[in-house]
Each structure stands twice: as structure tokens, then as C-alpha cells.
Image 1 (tube, rainbow, N blue to C red):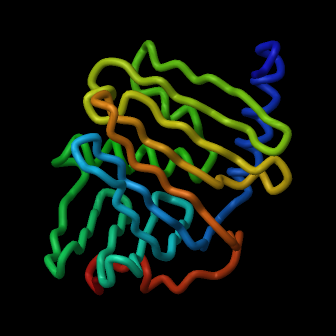
Image 2 (image 1 turned 135 degrees about the horizontal axis):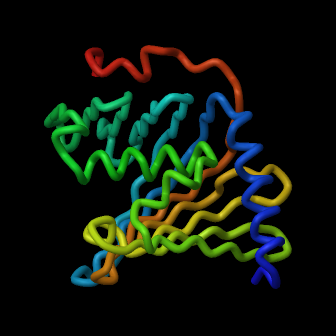
Length: 193
């Protein structure tokens, strides 16, 4: 745990500075969905792409063919072969999800502060920085908290856990990241998916 707020401020500044310098990310991911009513967690995996200015694409290898694409306000979701397109401005939950995910990968942690009482807590281990955002009000309807884990050496996001108020959670772990490498623009084309 950070002993003083000066430590927390220094860590946040370091992570924000690094995040601002990242224009693109490509990595593998594993998604673990925990639902208390189920006996076992649901595991998925695939490829994760990020480009500055609110572009995120998750192409699933398992389940094969599933996709989540965010390009500005446009969301494209493909699940079980069904495609849906939604504008985030028309859906407050998707708008919050877009803000949350882009804040996490870009290092713009101020965007996590969705309410007056949102608390950001910074901890560290020997190898990781851990940032936890505790939400209140309307943001808590979707997630009670979000936990971000960053590798200290690379200052890279290695895990993202979104905790729901009911005890369910979704956790992503990111592996083998490549930073600031060209990404084919077609990956973020909402009309081509």
C-alpha cells in the first residue's frame, strides 16, 4: 500500500505519462467471467487492439467469431453469429463501458471519476502497481469497482477486473503487448464487421 498520497500521486503521474505516449496496443487477452449462480467461470480469449481516440476491438478466438468493437460512439457486437450495432449516446451503459475501457488503457484515470464520491486507491507490490476505482451513484449500477494492475517495468496494463455490486465480475488479463505498432484501420471499421 502507498504510505503517503505523494507516493500515489507519483505513481498516477508515471502511469498517465506512459499512457499518453501510447498510440496503439495489440495483445492477446484472456477473459474470465464469474457469475455466482454458475458452478464454474466462463473463459474466453482472443486478440485485443487499441488505438487512441476511443478505438478498441476485441476479436475472440474462443468463442470463435465473437467480437466487440468500439469506435467513438459506435459499438458493434457479434455474439453467436448475431451482429448488433448500437450508438453509445443512446445507451448509457455502453457509454460508461467505453469511457471505462478507454480510460484504463490510455492512462486517463480522471475519466474514471464518474461521480462526486468516486475514490481512486493506489497500491503497489514489488512487481505491480494496482489502481482501484470505487464507484458511487449511477456508475455503481454497472460496476461497484474496477481494479487495474500494471507491470512496474513496462508500465503496461496486465489485468483489468470489473466488479459488479452483486459479486459477479469480469476479468481480463493481457499478454505479449506490442506498443505503438501500426494497426490495420480495417480492424476498427464498424461497417466492415
